[in-house]
Image (cartoon, rainbow, N blue to C red; front, top):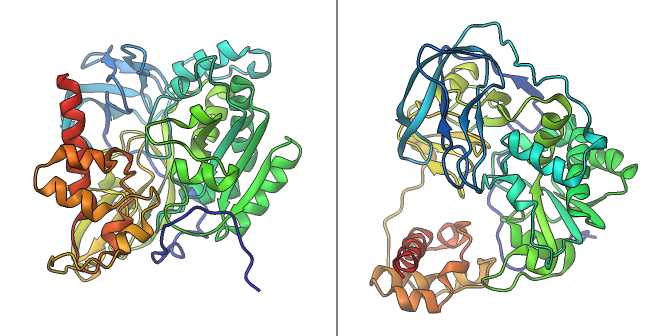
Length: 440
């Protein structure tokens, strides 16, 4: 008899392809010869540089000041010399201002390390420490955590959800974090709970991670938190779909999770918060999965922010075969890269390398009205209709069909038998609609 786990409507089951790294313990990736630390590490206003070429900096020292409310400071990932402040390639596809740092090999921390008064801090003090530490969402959105943890008083949060679903194929960084650092994830979750005053805290984990479920249950029991096993289905880790699966609450169109009393944080964000607030060391590293048929050995690595992707690939034994595509993130929502010279940033959950023979290239055909895209859409949209309007430049009609509710999971494109780039067209529509809004 098949056990029924909590889940959402729609979605699909792409090959998981996690076996190559799911059992691999997290390794510390050595420092590269050069770190490229962008001043744009998150959603919001980029930081303002506060160091100059020739200056010596320490690990954890602030090198970029936050500007504005939706912004956090940027810190040096190790000690060394600032050798340049200049535009460099960024995983977003843009060329953005970055601090280039030559490590001195000593990895000398600044004097912030050693602070440990977390239990004595008020919610306001915790929020300020989270902001100072540069904590942003490590699930991919990179929204500054102190903003997300500050809902208006009229929208109290009663359910805090910790996202351990990691539904993207190939990625296992969150999986290993829960297995190896479950206590730290729980400590960070408890900090969020104190800030929000949430009554219920639950950790959602897909059923394909039994060791992570076991480890998190052990750690959560004493803290009064729940671990809920979810069906293994893509995109189980999407925010609105996760909330529905765990609470039965549906975020209305155009609304935010806080409108229904829920807030979601990633397990990596929780662990990073616990580490930063207990040690005083800000966010300077994250766990990254390096995987795919195009790399010699798949691994889970703890990597300093600013490390070039090429350094990670070299540490994993180098490229195998004819490399045809590099993605930052997973195969469903990851961003294609022009090369391996871009740095690791907080949004870098994985690096996926694919060879020519791994790419399935099909010619695009006409829509055959099969309805598969509608069936799998987790937002219950009509992707083929929205995409058709977008391609005709009729953005008002695309908006009327709720294009802005698309979470860009790519399920529609994945399942389309005619190989129509549906999600790409919808992204175009969303960008056009947002541009129109800014004009008015």
